[in-house]
Image (cartoon, rainbow, N blue to C red; front, side, top):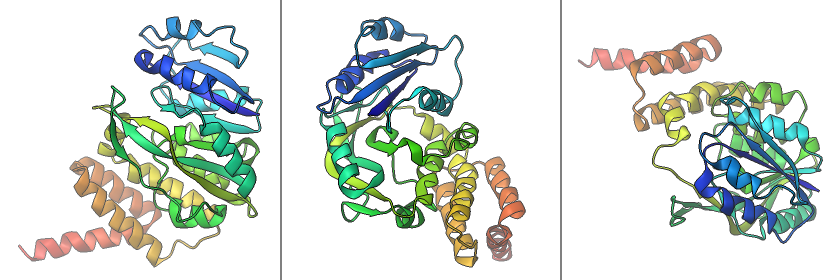
Length: 301
């Protein structure tokens, strides 16, 4: 069985489409867990229309807002009874064959993690762009995927495109994930690398629709440098799980990532200072490269 976790907050305009796209899946061996995080809109009215549906195992309304998507994920995970998990974000929606094709891929390739391709849509469901496939083929060893794709970034742009094996997640990992504001999903995917015989697989079809809003939490997080501040912590944890050395090449990769992101998102001086001090404490070679660059620029004046 698949446990579908639907965390929702203030997404009433999209809830009917989302819930219908779950309940009408061609793969019907699932339970749906709806978790509303004290939405101020009329989300409750829409959710209550589905009460009594045999596929819905839990409807939970928070009395106060948790302030964390990942806390809601954890709550859903603790309520889940299924062998597999699909975190279906409340403003996204899916083709009705997503679960069927994801489960077929999981069984065929012995996958602990499977994702479909995804299209990004606006608030009227107009397609803005189609994300390219991630894997060169249909599957890859999970450790290779973690090392080659997740060590320095998270190519899985949206949790709604993913179905993963519940038992592959260490129970105490959620205590780490809820401490993240932005990169908790990256840590979740990266933690699966311990199962050496398993794979990650990709359904080469556009089965997920990821909604883009004009103002997004991810944009705010990037502006605060969380892709570096939190991402580096995730990277170190993954490197430890894979028994990788944090060598010169590792430092160079993080330095170049920092330089690229601080230009792309115009990090303020305070954020760059925080990042610099983080690297001084944990990866001094990265800080050395930055200090060397600053000294070189001063000498050229």
